[in-house]
Length: 100
Image 1 (cartoon, rainbow, N blue to C red):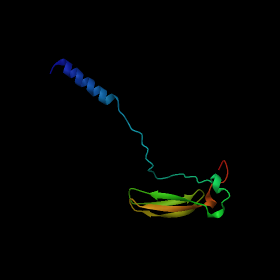
Image 2: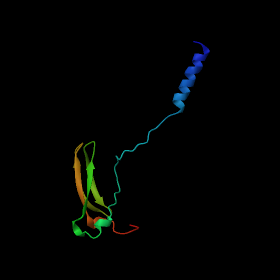
Image 3: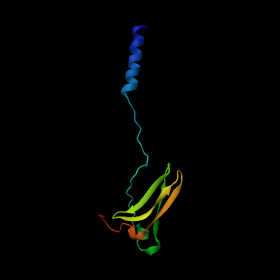
Image 4: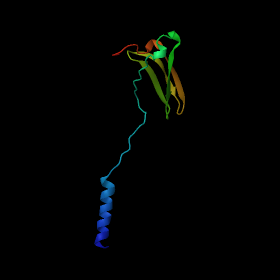
């Protein structure tokens, strides 16, 4: 094999292994999430009928627990792969102030 072929092959290998590209991972998969619910401008005076809904899903069958910081459990159970479960978050647990 001519010497310049070896040089070109070495250069190509150097190029491909030198520049390792990694894509960013924008997945929202995980085990623990912090989700703050707060009053919106139009919700502040709307009374007790206002609720927010949390939608939970998984690509594998798994168990879940929705807890309020401080120990209150709103809902728990098992989600089958591809199933969507809803959890209502009552407005009594909304953040109603700054610095909380």
